[in-house]
Image (tube, rainbow, N blue to C red; front, side):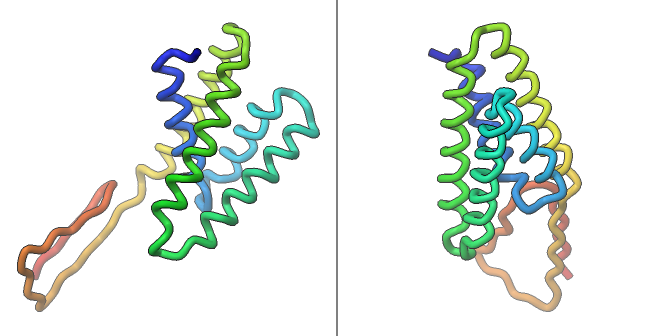
Length: 142
């Protein structure tokens, strides 16, 4: 059984994979995850690359209304795969893979930290309104 910190790391890893899909960080995350899950076996690594490509295709095909449930489902799939990977490894390897996974998560986080949302509202009337999102937001009400 994995300790809570490794379960949290696997969850963050699943989320990072989904976040990276379709961004500049995707190729690095894709190859890093495939290498981790492939465990040095070329055929396994190729299979993981194909699985990651299918994930990207599913995310890309999701309509706006279904995007969040699809993203959550894909993150859960990858979280589970990462949990299994970490659980099956000897402790020494587990710590090394955990460090590599943490580095990939930080890579995705750094790539996404520059994103911002800009909303400009001019000549509008607002009643019981809210602007929602994540990251850096700049709202201008004229």
